[in-house]
Length: 208
Picture 1: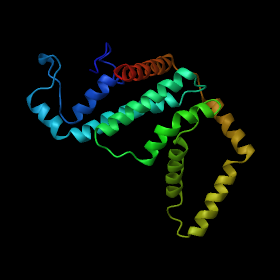
Picture 2 (picture 1 turned 135 degrees about the horizontal axis):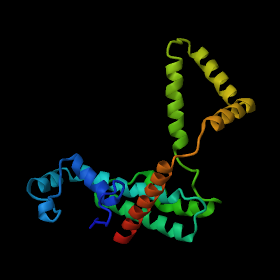
Picture 3 (picture 1 turned 30 degrees about the vertical axis):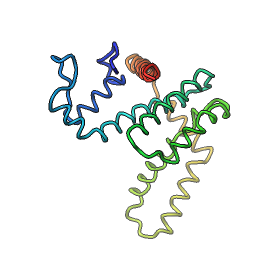
Picture 4 (picture 1 turned 90 degrees about the horizontal axis):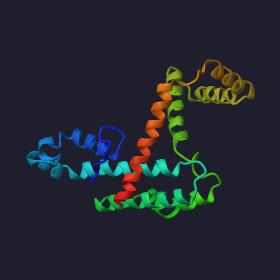
């Protein structure tokens, strides 16, 4: 069902599912047409809930990839709505509860894509991840400071200093001075990753 002409692509849907199965020592027998046999079927049935939950996550990755397009058009809205439907169908099919966030995605995500000028490209949780990383760095830097009041003062001073125009200009200059052009191999890999991601999404839509 998930076969493609590019089985060797590690980021294709077909290979992602194979990798998930491999985590549970479930291997498709090449001598048996690539089908599961004997003990592998038993493992799949025994751990079906965990395995299918991981597979469903692949469909959510496709949703996120699609909704983060810049300047989306009508075709993108339609594709996003279909991908959301596929992801939630898998979710419900496994008997998993739908969280409030899931209901929001189902009812409002595509509407917001249409309503926000330029789309939802910049609307993600990367800022939250960045906050976690900076928080961890600050905790490490101030680990020997016992006074919570002094910690707060230090954090405020650092935040103020980092947001000064002079500081930001200096950081941009250093970044520009030390940033070279991307290597051809890196650019080629980025193009290939985008292509494979597109094939994964198209594969999900074709299955629907």
